[in-house]
Image 1 (spheres, rainbow, N blue to C red):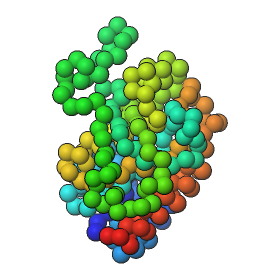
Image 2: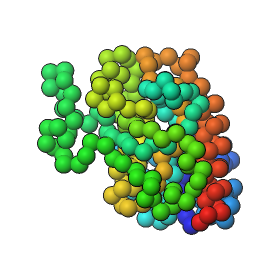
Image 3: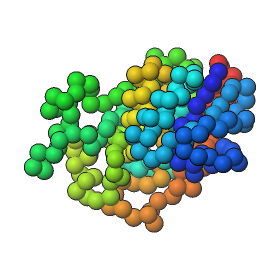
Image 4: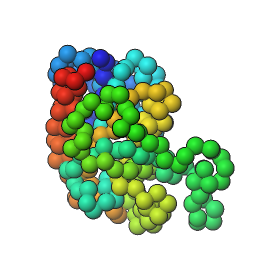
Amino acid sequence: MKILILAATAFEVKKYTNQALSQGILVEVDLFGRHRTDILITGVGAVQTAFHLARVADNYDFILNIGIAGSFNQSIGIGDVVIVTHDCFGDYGIDDNGKFFTLTQVGLTIEDKFFTNDLMFNPWINKIDYTKKITKCKGVTVGTASGSFEVIGKLFNVWNPDIETMESAAVFYTCLHLNKPFLCLRAISNFVEPRNRSNWNINEALSNLQTHVLNIIKELDVVI
């Protein structure tokens, strides 16, 4: 089995390899048992993620997207790790004199506004019992990380998301269209609030993320 671990930045996967990591360059790692596992850094943002993932996705049996995220939901706290089951492009739409309309609402796309990763029918994920222990949530993907009450309020009122990322919907979009089994795993580094980096805890988030990634791959090594 060939597994691709996908991340936006090198620091989100630095715990898995001592090799230099560059955007768009596949790096094989050997700490995950008998399966072939590669890491790919896409760069931050949906466009970069979709491009680099689409170039290589056909070569893999399972795609694991990992990284940090901000939480809108007070019950999903800093350091928590979640599985994103629904996501959307949160700022793709029309601004009509201060009121936001999604592309679906104005008839520019016929796709549902949320993409869904139906874990119950995913052939690989359904075999990983460990995923049942991880909180499931709804995400929103944005081109600009939210950092003001005005922006946060608009996003929340339209989408009612649990977390915010800058890439996950691109993974959903690409993998669903290519019919590739995938999982988006995110660790919470901060709450989505007026920007205040002193409230963030990236190290705790990445440490917990590493534990979950290793446990998922370890179980895959047994059941697949």
